[in-house]
Amino acid sequence: MASEVVETHEAEKNSEVVKLESDLKQMAQKILEYRTTLPDQLSSTLHSILDAHRPYFPLGASEQNMSREETSSAPEDPETAKKLKLLNEKISSNCSAMPIVLKRMKDCITRIEKFDSYKDATIHPAFKRKKTG
Image 1: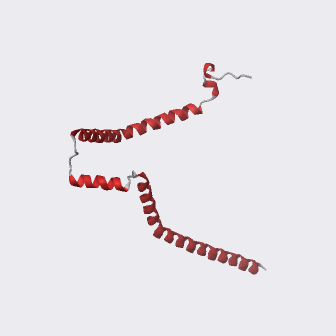
Image 2: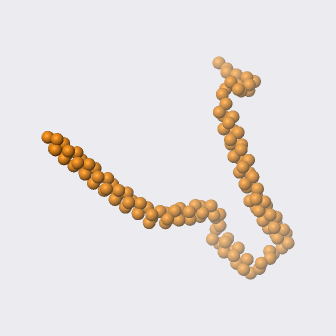
Image 3: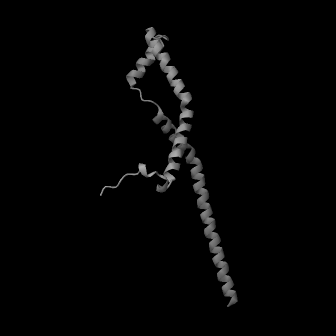
């Protein structure tokens, strides 16, 4: 009787080991599949995100700009050149100021979240709405 219990216990252990081994093989197969497909998926996702952030230029306008740049490196009149220079300066100053603006936005958001966490008791009664009823 004791030998039968030991045999069934060993059979259960063996079946559990076989099940764990098959699960391990399946996981290894999935990992192998992910390793082969994931870089391509990440690459395509990155390309689509970058394409989404790229400004849209109509096909004819971009061809005109390209042909204009090829024919002459200087703009047609000095006023256009001045406007172009001013635009480039504004764009570069905006780009350089972006980290500061983002930091200030994050600070404001944290202050707003901190203010939202306060209870109603801290709000002065003068700023509460009067209930009309």
